[in-house]
Each structure stands twice: as C-alpha cells, then as structure tokens.
Amino acid sequence: MTTMRHEAPTDKTPRDRIVFQILTPQFWGAIAIVAMWLAVLFDGVYGGDVIGSDGAHIPSAIFIAFFASLSTWAIGKRAFGAIGPRTGDLFPCPAQCPGSIL
Image (cartoon, rainbow, N blue to C red; front, side, top):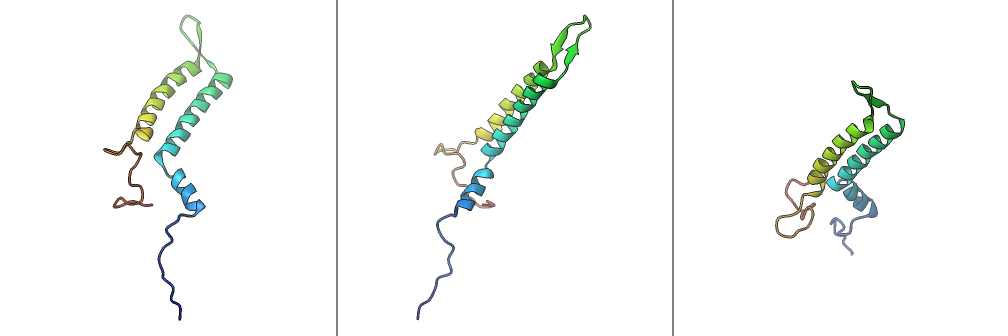
C-alpha cells in the first residue's frame, strides 16, 4: 500500500512569485515616484501659471516639481534603502523572519 506525505511543496508557483514581487516596498516606492512625476508632467502640460504681484507668469509645474523632488528623495530613501545588516541583501529573510506574512 502506498502512503502520501502531506507536506507543502518546496517550489513556489509562478503566481506566488508574482505576488511576492508585488508586495515588496521597492515596487510600491517605484509606483509612487512614477505617479508623482506623471502629475508634474500633466500639470506642466495642462496646468496654469502662478501670476506674481508684478505680473510675472511662473508655471505652476516648477513648484510641484520642487516638492516632487523632495518626495522622490524621501520615498527613495525609505523604499530602496532597506539593506540587510551584514549580507547586503535587500530584506534578507522575507519568508523566514518571525511574524512575516509571506
């Protein structure tokens, strides 16, 4: 008589690998940075001007681009700056760490 072992498979399915890639902070950091700069682009093309007290017209995209550059720096540092202590790997134990959801 043959018996079957009820163990989880060791290989991850392609769907699990895709979900693991989407749940990383690097992915969401990149999405946030792209969205910010798309907002700057659309404001530069379709947005209005800021009119100074002397009648000077300044594109509003300049001000939005300044704050987008500050936000890009902050998001980049947070999303891409999580390097492991000794190995240099990004998130050295994603599935093995205690309390991990993956």
